[in-house]
Length: 214
Image (cartoon, rainbow, N blue to C red):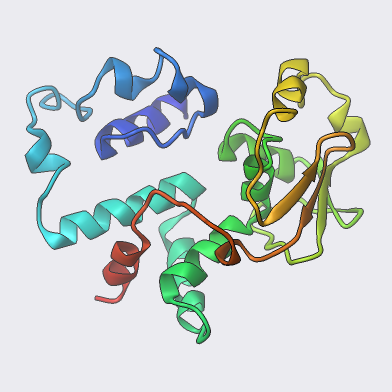
């Protein structure tokens, strides 16, 4: 799985931090091999495969970035888009990213309780996460304003799940404005909607919307 994620980042030509902190160091595949994977990858022109290209190619690339960032299957991302279309109060792109950000696995990642979304998915799937005191093992669960998310007490004291290094880093970690994270009891309170804050997401959501609107 690790090599697959590395190839994804090399193909898209940028770091998506799919493998957490590894992407920030010298071992990152994009740093070590800054060219597309495959037999002809090293000789491929950046302009032809990554920069520029047709409008469709640009839109496809941004859509793929969203897919891999949030770890979604194509069918699932399309369902999120169709649901975002039904939101008449907000632009479709804002509504789409709002739903993706409120996924339970993403909440764990954004709060700093998991080094990557992939790790966060495993934490949720294996029953380590509580929402309002009840166990939820569905990574795609959408949190709501007022929800309180936390690790089970037994899980938070497990060094294999939350290392001492992670705990130390949490004291300096800045969670998004739409959540309130209490580092002492490791509880996350959802205080607003993501699109009500200064939400900065790298993929160009307008291109994603245009891709699905074809």
